[in-house]
Image (cartoon, rainbow, N blue to C red):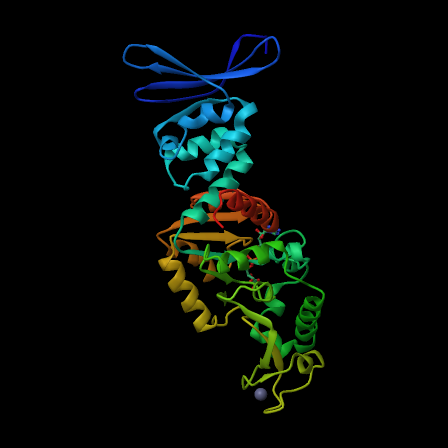
Length: 349
Ligand code: APR
Ligand code: ZN
C-alpha cells in the first residue's frame, strides 16, 4: 500500500447506508484508521478518525452484526473480525451466516456453523456410526476398508449363522472382541463426553457396538445395536463371561450356543435404547449425525424424527444426504476437534 493512501479493510451496509473501515500508513509507516459513513438518503459522507483497529471496529458490537450485511472484508482483517464475530451470542440468523462466509474460509465456515448450532441449541442428540470409530483403528462396514467388503453380512451377521455356521460366526465376533482390547476412544469420543458434562449436548445414540462412547465417559448413551462386551446364550438369554464365548463353551444353563449381545440383521433392537433415542431425538432442536452411511433400518429413520435442525458429518457427504440442514465433509475426530476449538473461542465454556 502506497504511503498516505487510504485502503479499505472492511465495508458493511444496511438500508440507511454503508460504513467503511479504512487504514492509512504515513511516511514513517505509522498506521491510522478511520470510519467513513455514507448516508443512503443524500450520499453525505461522515469521516471519524480512530487511533487503533480495535477502536475503529467498535461499531460492530452485539446486535450490530445483525443490522449490517458485510460487503467486503480485506483478508488482512478476516481473523480479527472472525474472532470478534465468535464472541457474539451465536444466532442462526441470515446476516450472521453471511458474516461467517466473509470472515472464514468455506471449510471453516461449516465448522463455525456447526459450533454455533451446538452453542445455540437447547437439546442436542448426536447419532453416530462406524465412521466415529475408524480413527480408533476399527474398520467400518461399507467403505473401501469396511468389513462387508470382505465378508457377506448375510452369511455372518444373522441369527442363522449362530445355528448353521457357528465356528465362522464365533471366529468373526471373537476377532472383533479381541480387537477391542487394543482399541481406545479417540479425542472425538472424549469431546462428546465433555460436551455432555458441560450440557452442550444431551446424549449420544450409537450404532457402534465397541463401547467407545461409554469408555470415553459419555453417560447418556443409547447403544442401538447392542455391545460386543456383553455375551449371552442364543437360546435362553443367560448372560455369561466373554471368555466363555471366546473359548466356544456352551451355555452353562442349557448347553445352548453363546453369542455377543449385538443386534444381528432381522433381530429387534434393544427396546430401552431405541425408545430412549427416539424420544430424545423427537424432542431435540438439533441432531448431529456423525460417521454413518444411514443404510440400515430402522436407525436410518431417526434423523427425520426431529423437527429440529439436522447436521450430517461424514468423510463422504453424498448428494442423498441433501435433506440435512448442513453437510460437513470431514473426519469425525478432526471435525470435532475443530468445533471444540471454535466453541472455546466463542467462550461457551
Ligand atoms: N469420519 C467420518 N466419516 C467416516 C470416517 C471418519 N473417520 N470413516 C468412515 N466414515 C464414513 C464412511 O464414509 C461411511 O459413510 O462413515 C460411514 C460408515 O458407514 P457404514 O460403514 O455403513 O457404517 P454404519 O453406517 O455405522 O453401519 C450401520 O450396519 O452392518 C451394520 O450393524 C452394523 O451398526 C452397523 C450398521
Ligand atoms: Zn442357555
